[in-house]
Length: 209
Image (tube, rainbow, N blue to C red; front, side, top):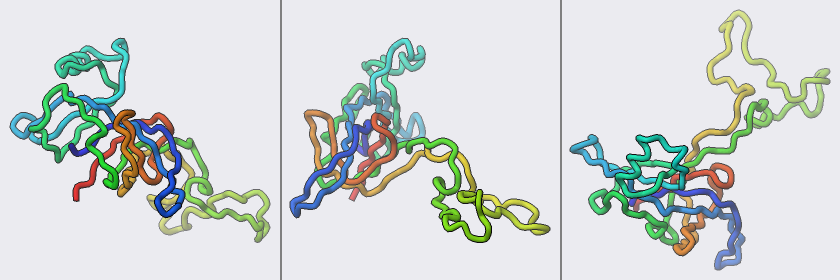
């Protein structure tokens, strides 16, 4: 199995054999249900569709409800496709658990970062600002400064670092080591941090050696 859907529980730390304090993230990974098996003959590519997270029936459309009923499961909140999977080994309704991971495995985690709203250049791009108040500055401490030229090019270049919406972006953190797997609680502990707030959904993809 190429990966699984999970939910961020929070961060903690563990001690290594050498006595180092290692920051890590606890993730509830699965169990996920196989809701569709896609093949090259029918859909044009091979993939497995997994579902995770319970969803109320009254918030489920009839099309979604029929899709889940065909797989023999209750409505789910998240659907994700995983390619590069031996889909022949799975059928509709099969359960994918955290057992697909082992300690010292490496994974890539995909999530949506925390939204921080509209922010200035100091917070968004780490501009230094004019903290020493030189050259007569008195009310422009966090301003971006000049953003363009005069007669040429008479416009602002695309990609100029300016104030704007910050966060709430899909990010992928690569090469995170699995420190611990707790099958009875559907938990994995990975080294380092992952995107998103507590309770946000994540995609955990295995790295193939």
